[in-house]
Length: 260
Image 1 (cartoon, rainbow, N blue to C red):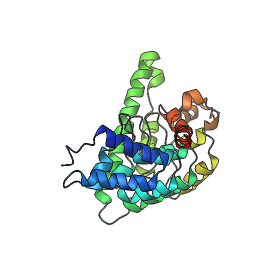
Image 2: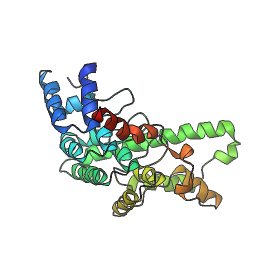
Image 3: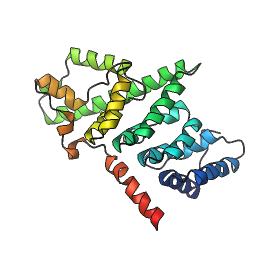
Image 4: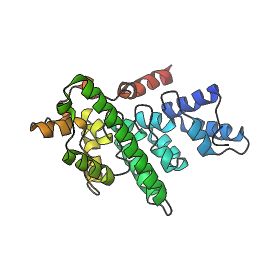
């Protein structure tokens, strides 16, 4: 059932809009209707299917727009896998919440992820999710290396054994929620680039309970060259996620719809 479950275009559009607009009561009703219309289906199946072509789900939009009440309603309905599901640009709902500086949403998300990952019997799933994150990160680095080698001399693009070893160790010890997007950045890096300092401080303190987040590619390059450049000084054009601009404009566009 889960493999073939789909939503109609109308139902999908309604669910995504209600999450984006923060219409919690209507969203609750729409989720119930979508579930009841498919015999034997579950709310999790509906949530799994409720993504657009860019891979954005209900949590992406409600988190991006800072709709805490909607987020608090959705969080218990999401499995750990869905909480960490990235869109096509590799951004999780936490990336978007951090990018837009929605501190209360960031706190709720990290708490729920940590609760779900520490639940009895979750060990094997956590290992699988960490393995999936490592695989995506390895693929991203391979693709970047290929692109670099085609544009520069081979000796300039070769990573040292020490650098590879350091990155692998950091990937193993970083918090489960601190996953990297297609640009190689975690939620805290996105918040720092957007100058959302309260979110940066919270995630930094939270991550230090385990291990520091891995450096971004830009930070690694600066360290290896002996000239460390502060992340916040990177140009916005170079630093933003592929879908960061969309996340930035979500709140404005939704408010305009609500006021009409």
